Length: 294
Image (cartoon, rainbow, N blue to C red):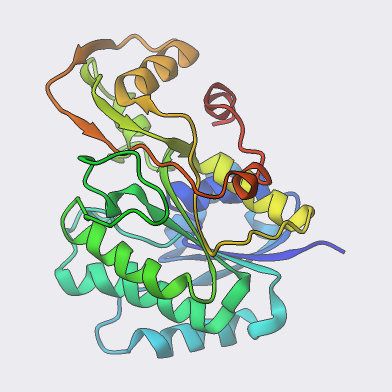
């Protein structure tokens, strides 16, 4: 029997990547903020007609997040109608429409929503967190490292969610990268492809995982019934500079873009894990393989 999975925020970078992995493997419930976003998902990846689609906007100043989640659950068919819920809803510095979130909206989307999803779905929820709960001055960071959020309100909003969500649900802290559906996005790869000359940070170190590989991880958990002991786990992949990432991406896609090494920025957000045996269960692919699967 096919597993039933809800992908919340199925048209963003992460959600569309997870959809790409699961669309032929599972019966899906997909959410997006508009029909236009679903149309774009269909145009790029296809197959959406075979899945349930719900319009859901996480920003509603008139309705508390708790009630919005309750209504979403009702529209999904009930609490027990899904085997897994993957929360791909989040906002970094701009909405896809171009507007800048207010402080209230940052916390509605990145804190209140995942907390209420965790209350509703418990252990069936996978919630991705971020290395932005650290400022990059004291790497490597493990699950017990003291947080020092960066990237303004975003880092704080994600951290506050982590502390509550991990009590009931699975939190994977990681550095997610990938390609967007919209070609005018400011996600790293999508933005990079529009440039003629770019400075690549040789001293900005991260431990990346692509959105597609995150989807593969979710599928392995489902297909192999993998149990992870800590509810907060760092997806600690090998560290690499942003320059090296862009160089590999450029070579793989044969892009005619000048990439200039830039050592002016010193940031190290290397993630380590205190649970290597648990991380090994997820069988995360090497980075070169991840890039090829984009």
